[in-house]
Amino acid sequence: MTRLWEVSELIAMEVDATGAPLRFRWREQVHPVEHIGKRWRVDLGWWHVHIWREHYKLATETGLLVIVYRDLLTGQWYLQRLYD
Image (cartoon, rainbow, N blue to C red; front, side, top):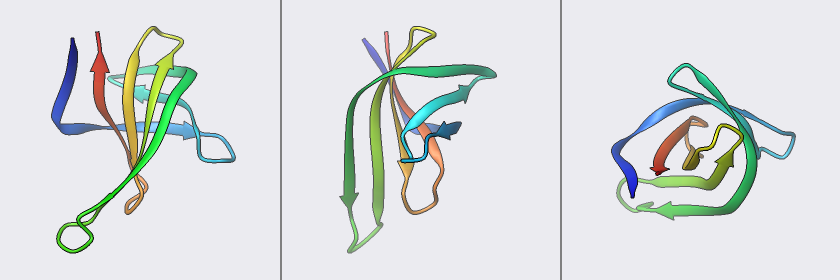
């Protein structure tokens, strides 16, 4: 089962020199990234409401499997999905 939030939660992300996630803070806990399983970009709606994001499917050292994304228009990071 997964939890997908209709409105993604804003998170604080620390990245390496290439912009890849290293660790993030969610609900007052730090989650170091153990493995990046997948990375992809989405560029939609440029003709209407522009959505430009870079998604990552991550496993963390704290046992989470999540999908996070960086809004490439604002630079902010969000938690989109949590796998149980």
